[in-house]
Image (cartoon, rainbow, N blue to C red; front, side, top):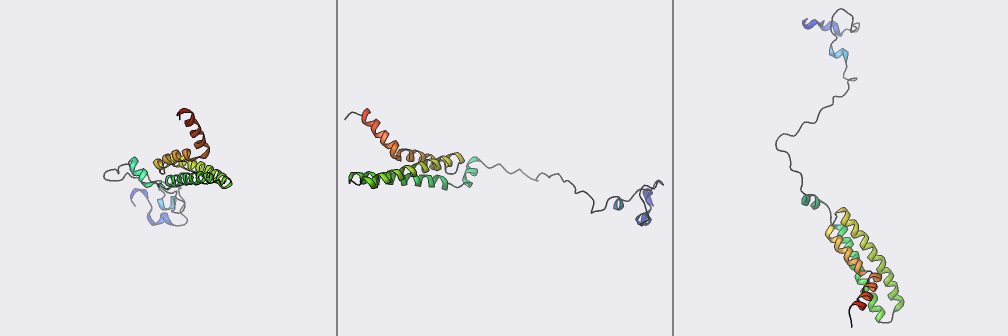
Length: 156
């Protein structure tokens, strides 16, 4: 046989590898398929032109803007609550007006926080920034301080 192999005799059960007579051990006996370690294949580069990396606009296009829109809805809800609360205060309904003011504070803080999340995560960043501004101005505490400050600055 060629290359020192013993052919079919090498596959007999009484064949022991490394007998010292110069016969090479066939690969089938040296390492069977069950105890062979899996080959680590290196990843092959794709053929052809490399795909271009997505641009910032394309990556942002995949994200949803619902967080920013929801923040703006909360901020506009706070504006409505403050407006209704002021109208109730003019109608001498102070108990309902104060309840709406507290609820408007909670809603405007929620709108500000959700708008901040939208700005940080990039999910409706511009909507979130607008929502933060609107909810800050719609907060009854901030609105009261702003009107008080303007009353001292602007002469009547």
